[in-house]
Image 1 (cartoon, rainbow, N blue to C red):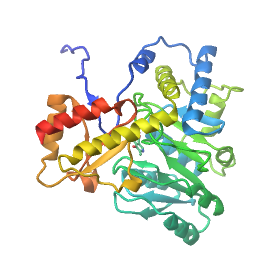
Image 2: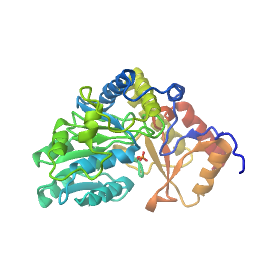
Image 3: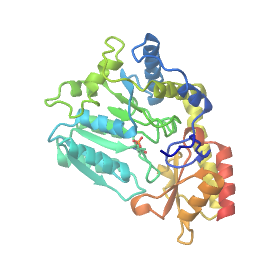
Length: 371
Ligand SMILES: *Cc1c(COP(=O)(O)O)cnc(C)c1O
């Protein structure tokens, strides 16, 4: 058999659509010796994570946990627990992730009702109300808060109230927003909200923070049909995370939970407001710098995300070639466009640890050489 070299990847500056940079304290936490997942000391760590997650989600929801899988499992968990065969779910589709939601709802036997918008736009409140009226008896409305494929931030403040008026649940994908821009689960009356660790929480990929209101949990508990997924059935996972039962369900990824706890501790130390301001500031600095090269934002300012910055490209820019050189010569990763936007935009992630003025300055300097 051949021999295999010791693992030694290049040191990249991660300014793409995720993963983002990881703080040294989080790497240190990852290398902490593991203990048993039912060890009282580990149970305390799970409690800490729950408290810290309630802090970042701005919620009092009891069921606020980290699912042992990536962000997509958060998405899947929201739908498999809520959707039973025949249920209608309104989904805002203005990028990649609304389509993924629709696919999952279909697999649950539900009926996805799509509100389609051109990529780069958000979903209007009026369009949601029209669909709620027209379809009738809608179980849930699902929206992507931060559409990573386009850089659009979906306004959410009024949607929860509207959903309540029509007896529908509100499910929100906050994978690229949580920890970078305000996500106010309680104020915005969101019923289920999920995220991922590797975007604005600046932890390696591997866990999906999620929160359910008591009402959403009781809906899961009173289903007519069993949740199709054994692994993501929240009624069982609730017993695992509950400080009363702690019933064995699966072995929590110990090291990832260590890492998440440290990443959340960093956010708590920094404070949410300061962190959101930092994200906004870096994004403004990036766009101000890009303007000097004649590059302009793809998304209108009123709905522009500071965590995922999409930039319009003119036809004379050999975008793939420049991205390749950024990676090879400067160790900088940025993202290209997906789907219809391939070749038309760049996606520059300024998430969590990545969102620093020094990183923006370095990227702009590298681009000045290449453009
Ligand atoms: C990244 C992302 C996901 C999926 O998360 P994974 O960790 O890649 O499974 C879901 N929704 C949005 C908006 C994302 O950006």
